[in-house]
Every structure is written in structure tokens, then in C-alpha cells.
Length: 294
Image (cartoon, rainbow, N blue to C red; front, top):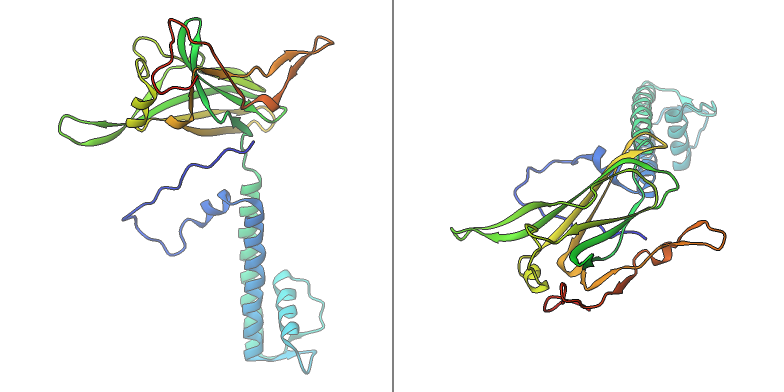
């Protein structure tokens, strides 16, 4: 149940940097890419020193060293293995050994810090329903979407916020993207363990009151959902984020029930229905706006 990443933002005119924010990129990279970068850096650095050893020469213990011998000697020096089969026998080689030893110490310290900082990162395994729905609840149109905690623990003091972003045109003819907070029926949960259905009542004063799907499309409406809380296992803050566009709203439908009671009286949570929606009937208080589903 992976959620799509938001589209990247193209930035024009930003100050260019040679290497960029490598630490931030390392933390955001997947584990396979981060570890692959560490291994590639280690092998590349040793290949560079192997080439320098081949240029200056002066290694004892091997009268006819090959490229692999130079590379192996570099690895022994940087990793402080020290088998002793080859050794620096000239001043130039000794200078290179000292330089590589310093590089090895710094590399070990930096890589250890990077891997530890990435390993100690906490991330909530929160999934959002693929679609948000608009349907009557107690006779009142209500926007709703579902969250799920895919871990077996709890996110304590979880707080949920929904921000509506839309395009507006001022009286001066300037186009702006403005953000508004949408109040929820319940914006916090003392212990978010499995499923949570968030709801916004489309009543008087709501930014969605009287809106039809065509209105939301014209205004390029997006709903940005953010969740913050504390992981009760690691006691570290966790956060999750999701965006619903106006195309992700299903009118005249609600999310399928995922909670039921088993034969033994136990509570059953069916995550296979997490993203399912079921249609609702037209009513006098909610006849479905023109262009809506249902």
C-alpha cells in the first residue's frame, strides 16, 4: 500500500552548489542506494590510491606487483588490516601511506556518522486511502478519508491537519495559490493504532459548501493532509503526508467498512478493503452536485 510521491518542484534561479546538500540527500535516499554509495566511495578511493602507488612505486615484498596487488595494498592500508606481505619501501610510498591512513580515519568517522544518523531515523508507516469521499453523514454532506497505521504499535498524541490549496484571482487580476485550514470533526487521537477516518463537515462556513466537482477543478483544489505524533516504541516523533487532488474526490460514496466482529466476538480489521468505497443513495439533503459520481 505504498503511496505516490508528490511531483517534484522545479526551482529556477536558486543558487547552485557544487555537491549540493549531500547529507540531506543521503538521509532521504533508500537504504540500497545509500549503502551502494558508501561501497562505491570506498572502492573508488582505493582505486585512486592504487593508481598513485603504481605511479610512485616503492613497495616492498613484491617484485612485480599487479594492479590488483596495488589495490589490495590500498585496501589493507585504509582498513588497517596490515597483512604485511607488502610494505612501503620508499619515501614517496610512505607519504602516500600516511595520506591514505588519514583519509581512512576521516572516511570511517564520516561514514559511521552518516549510517548511524540514517539508521536512527524514525518514520511512520502510515497509509492513506487512495480517494477521499463526499457523502451525507446524518444528513449533512461530509468530506472523509481514511488513514491506517501499518505497524502493530501506536502513534500517541497523533494530530491531523488538512489544508485546502486553491487558485484565486484577486481584484487586481493577480493569480495566487492560497492555503486554508479545513476543520475536522476530530483532529487528534490519543493513540492511533490501526484505522482512523477523518471527516470535515461541509456545512455553513465550509470552503467546500455549495461547491461542485467542476468548481474544484476550475480552482485546482488540492487537500494536503499531514499527521504528526510520537512513536510509542522508539519515543521519537513521526510524521506522514499525503495530497488529494480534486480528481481524487469521489462524490456520493463512502469508504467501505473494515471493522467487523468475528465469530468469537473478537474485533476483525480487514485491510484488504482499506481503499474500497461504496456508493450512497441520493437524498433530498444531498442530491449529488452536477458532475459528481453516484
